[in-house]
Amino acid sequence: MSTTTTNFTDVQQTTLQKTIVQVCSQLEGFLCAIARNGTLQQAIRATFGDRFHPDKLENLCQDWETYCFESLPQIKICDSEEIHGLNSLFSPHHHTIYIAQEYICWKSTQTCDIIAVLLEAIGCFIDYEVASFNSSWGQGLSLAESLSSQEIKCHCQ
Image (cartoon, rainbow, N blue to C red; front, top):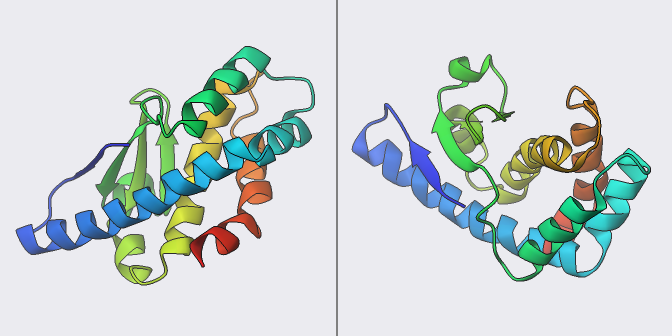
């Protein structure tokens, strides 16, 4: 998982980058765990029914089980205005997840909250990659909600 920051002072960039690196490390552990224990597969089946590509899901799970996250979009820290006031946003055209610097600063000591916001964008990425229909991201957000409820809290403790 690669990250970049833009348009901030060196001190701000260092602080934001440190936080996001810590969050990404925890997020990768979480993604590996849900791929290994079957939670991801169950959530995708519950969210999409039979309208997804099983081969793409299998490849994604195999990658995540072995801590291979190269297929995930890069994460770019930006001003919330750039993403219309949202906390995070997945852009399939740029293969990038944008996360608002303001949100990271606000939640810097609550990494589980940052993970949950990134998981929403990853849910949209999974929707885009695995679903066999265009859901306008609604299913991606539902997927993230089903994964994030107790799973993240248990993983962060």
